Image (cartoon, rainbow, N blue to C red):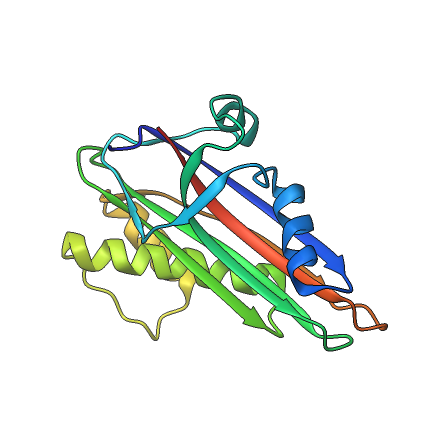
Length: 180
């Protein structure tokens, strides 16, 4: 089985129970009614990224669905959480791409998203034999990689949240969901 499509989604949930906060985050992401199987980080050749709406329309409740999932939970009041998925797709679509998952405490949505996107692009760059300097800022590397024509698309989807003052369990999640 090699997926032909994938979609990106995210969600956040708060509840007094950790598991319920995760379930609410899954609902917010629209993927609560599937049997999710976590997989690693490869985007198959020729796999197309579709909208969440299109991807969900092709899945059925109870279906076993493969995904790359990043999630983070805490009940520590005022704690900042972020969960992110980064994507890097090569210009040559007959090659595979990468998905990265990243989650962190204390990172803004923007910082976590950039980090996840950089991770995916760095993994793809190393596979394609593109040299890079990790000390160079992500925006600079992104432009260099796009200009060399080997990496055509990078993006991320990120969910951040602040745990409420009352200490309810808060879960953030981001996912790349494969559609068979």
